[in-house]
Length: 163
Image (cartoon, rainbow, N blue to C red):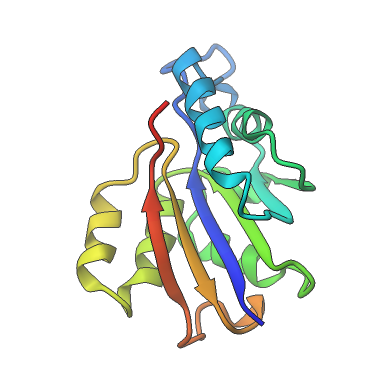
């Protein structure tokens, strides 16, 4: 049974917030960026979303306009790629298409780690280029619990839609 994992960096946020980094909101460009990504994701059948609890990630998910349950997690705020991977391995086996919306460097780091076995250059590129609103899709043939051990993991593509 094939599963799809989508790793997305939040859309463009304001540079400053009186509420601190976690409270930064999306700017007008970020809202349009997220809506554009939502149009791209709408046909992929996202069944569940893991989202950082930061304001900008929550607003990104809202602007995506997807019809899927969202699980907001403090643990995904500016965390490591290992933390993101751990949360993915805990997803219910019934979920076939999972979207994770979080931050750099965790999202690009995990994307690069997952892409490395398939394409070293693509993995290096992901570490250097992963702008706001970008997402990478992976397909795996095993359970979520085997994410980091699954030899059948394949990178499908890297996308950043134009607003």
